[in-house]
Length: 234
Image 1: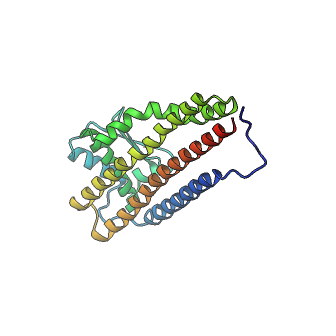
Image 2: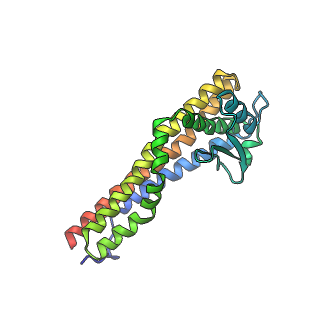
Image 3: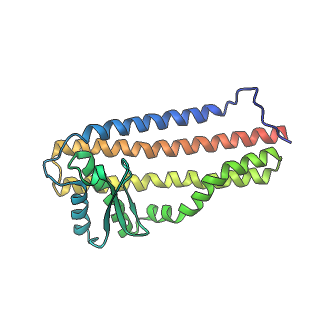
């Protein structure tokens, strides 16, 4: 039977620490950039909600509702209810950050309209990923404690779905940003100098998803390392 030791340094913790550092850097970057451009008002005079409404109407999605919600950068598109939810700081602001974020989330609505493959796959995987994120580590730890490898394997397989979800999220987010920037520039919502700010905002936001994917991969490697060590000691 495998008994975890508390008296030696576990090298796999380095993977966990690395993931935490990457995530902290990404979060600091997005806070800095979005905060900076939240202070710069656009010349078009539209709020984030007004921009989203115009983009949705122009894209044949006048039936998609827009709701204002609380929180900071809690903005998202809900494909189940066909609702675009914008935080107050985005919906009611005329800043570069607000318009960039609103356009990005509207890009997700366009993906849904077009049955964009990665979005369809990500939406279908949500329930499985929720199960995997809650049960993977408990299953691995129980399997190690009771020296039952099938339980460890089941936990690792479940966590693989979590990793896959974070990887699928990358093209979904990158594509939504590409759609947003193309519309903001093509429809002349933003001037050339404002577009530079919007690109920085959306690039910083994309970095958080890259960090999440990298962190998930590192956690998977740590699970595999712990599992291998458990097999050697059982």
